[in-house]
Image (cartoon, rainbow, N blue to C red; front, side, top):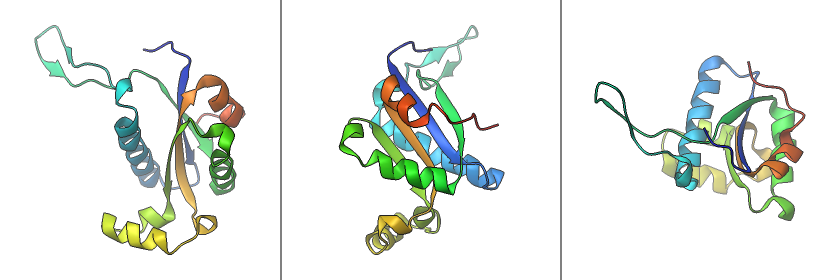
Length: 140
């Protein structure tokens, strides 16, 4: 749908239960949509006149990770060379909370090194995204 120099990937811990994988990717996708609204296409009308809300115009590669790969990747993404990438993470700290206010409070008391990442989404220049994720297999 889009042939730009940009790329979007989600790396999900493939060892998680299917429901948690689905929930993690949904959460990452909603946040990506907030921070990259230019990637959401215009609404579409089908041949019967029915309206379909715009969807993302940049394909999202779903990649297979595990907690160690995600931890290392998230750490690398804090480096200055990757500052222009849009990075969304979802961790056990967030997943364990029922209210966003609880997440804010809990996260403030837990150092990053103690977060276990369930998934990370990255959007940015293809070269930088590929440098970080080009070796990762597709999540199937």
